[in-house]
Each structure stands twice: as C-alpha cells, then as structure tokens.
Amino acid sequence: MASIMGWGLHPLTLIAPHLQSGALLEVVPDTPLAVPLYWQETRAASAVMEGLSRAVLKAAQNSLITQTTGIRIG
Image 1 (cartoon, rainbow, N blue to C red):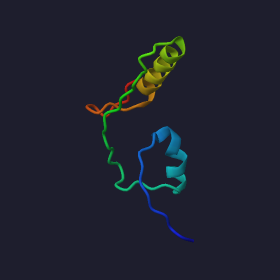
Image 2 (cartoon, one colour):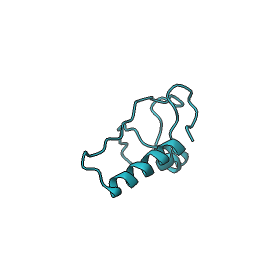
Image 3 (cartoon, helix red, strand yellow):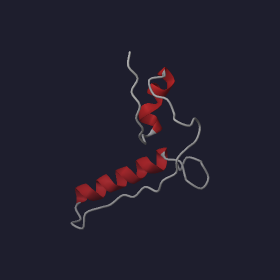
Image 4 (tube, rainbow, N blue to C red):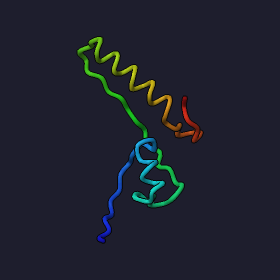
C-alpha cells in the first residue's frame, strides 16, 4: 500500500477519529500551531448574516483554544 504525505490545519473535533485510528498522524505530536483567526462580514448587513456571524462566534468560543493560555474559550 502506498503512503501519502500532506499537511493541513483541521479542527480537532473533525479529525479526532482519524487520529485515534492512525489514519492521520501529527507531524510533530502534541505541538499546537497558534494562528490568529478572523471572521469577516459583508458590508451589506442582513438578518441572515448577523445570525450566521453569531453562530460562528459562539461555536468558536465553545470549541477553540486560546493562543495565550492554551485553554478552551468556552
């Protein structure tokens, strides 16, 4: 069987089963890569976009780890 190598940044919640099964391996185990994330909104405000923005920010607060403390935000 051929091996394939690649890299990417993925939310742990999406890849945890693949890490556990060994299908994915960390390049440098237990070494998080902290990068700032930004959420941009269109200037044309709408109720749909405002609702989406609230949902994205809430999900981020509940699942992302802070850069300074290494602790989950939510």
